[in-house]
Length: 69
Image (cartoon, rainbow, N blue to C red; front, top):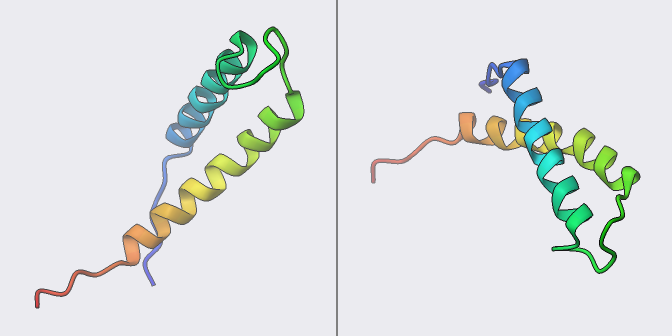
């Protein structure tokens, strides 16, 4: 099994970008019915789960082998 060697600063930057984007969309009301309101619990959950799932996807991608058949 191969493990990816992630850059922690890259994960932090990507996570901040995703959380900031969702916060802006939430605040403007584009994806939620209540404009001008933020749900901090949702944003914290995304900030915790996004790097974990991104790492799992990278782990699967590092271990997938293509068959030349």
